Image 1 (tube, rainbow, N blue to C red):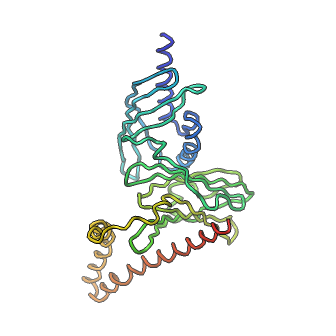
Image 2 (tube, rainbow, N blue to C red):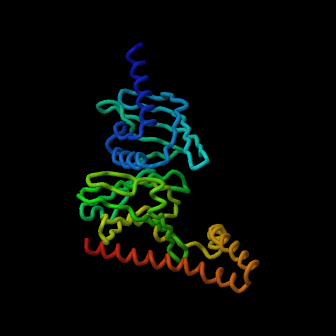
Image 3 (cartoon, helix red, strand yellow):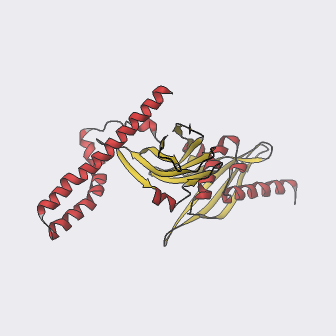
Length: 307
């Protein structure tokens, strides 16, 4: 085997190791390492383990300083009784700097350096408990967010819940992941000196995460705000004729469960009870979530003002 062939084989082996590694931070350039580390931490603690199969690797370009590899992979994730599968074609760019390192990964024409970003966490630290976050936009419809928790104290801290704030036309929305639900997905108790992670798949319209934690054995709770799409908190105004078109599908989707319950009440009970439920209870739930988000945002504004 010639030196060139050995070098090309080494590049392909490095790319394969990068694609299959649980923690890919050693294989990437310094600018990508922190994001890879946080996602690796969240993946390690997740109870859902994806299976990755590298179907093909092909070195398409190479100089003494740069190389490009075309890769085809398939990913399978077990969700209960269902197995979710997807395939991807990746263009992996490498640079030679004290060895070959991955500098970028292009999927669907968009590079990782454009899709990935470190998220702002406020406060970043509280009484020795640190939260970090990184996000990668997977498509126009979803964003992967990885949270890292570091406990520098001598007490056990617990994750109480995570709220996902999203945009609404009139009201702010908040969906909550309870401690019970989170415990089925990942670690929710953080021992002294430990580091753990949490992976969340968010819709593209999500704007902020609210993370509630507390030291075990105390009544105090602390809330961390993670800005996901902070620059899009105030979406551009849509012309009046286009508002119904853009809001029609989410409104119909949100109304289906309540319409079904209203029908049940109407059949088994009275039409007046069904009307009260459909016209009063649902708006009250939305209003309660809106008020909760407003209070949280006021606390965040006070924190920013004092910081």
